[in-house]
Every structure is written in C-alpha cells, then in structure tokens.
Length: 172
Image (cartoon, rainbow, N blue to C red; front, side, top):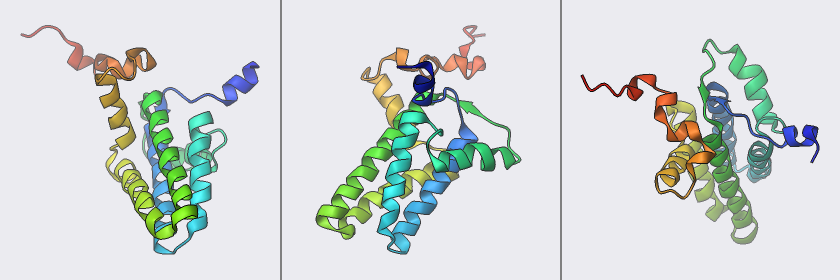
C-alpha cells in the first residue's frame, strides 16, 4: 500500500475532543431529525459518515471535515487532545448500530429501526452535551478485561501520561 493511501486510511491520534464532540452534535441532529420528521433517508448518510470516520478519521467524512476545519476552530475553546483508538472504536460502534438500523428498516420497517436510532441519538447526546463517550467507556472496559491489548492504546492503559499528578508514587 502506498504511503499516500496508507495516510488516507489512518485515524488521527490524538483526536481533538472538541471536534469529536462537534461531530457527535451533528450525529445527534441527524438522528433526531430522522426520528422527529420521519426522514429515514438520513440513516444512509449517517451510516456512511460512521464508516468514513472509522476508516479515515475526518478525511472522507463531510461531518468530520465540518467539525475539524470549521466549527471546532471557531469555538472559543482550546483544542483538547484525547487518545484516538477509543474514539475510533466508538465510531465503529456507531457504524454497527447505523448499519443494523438500515438493515432493520429495510427488512422490518422503520418502527423497529427507531429504537436503534434512539440508542444512537442517546450516545451522541452523551458525547456532545456531557463529554461522556459511551464507546470509549466500552473500549476501556474491554482493555480492563484484556480483550483489547494495552499496546493498542498505551496512553489509555497508563493514566499517568494524561494525569501526571496521579503518577506520583510518593504517598506522603
């Protein structure tokens, strides 16, 4: 694989938490619009966006581009770097839920798919409004259970890298 192609299909590490929360706000807006206004077609760009972000970070995601290039830089908040692997995992969870909602919509109807879109909207709300990434929380639990090796995210495994105060070994 060429270097250019490899860089296209890479996920940023670290990720700007402000941009990630901005993307979540966009996902929330689209999911709520799909539900409130019966706009089922919004599931298609939502699903595409999640897959694009899993594969390339914000590079091929229109929502990711808007968040990283326009919205987040214009906010009066400093960028906050956060580990990329948990965010990529969270995008993968979103892609799975969106794909399931499209499959359910096409096979069983939108009434059943609404529940999956509601779960997606809830997770997006938690990220956008509260800064609580449910996918990242699952990622952390999988690391603690040793289902995801620590080598995937050394920074995630070693909290002292993000919080030097916690690294102090002097109990006095």
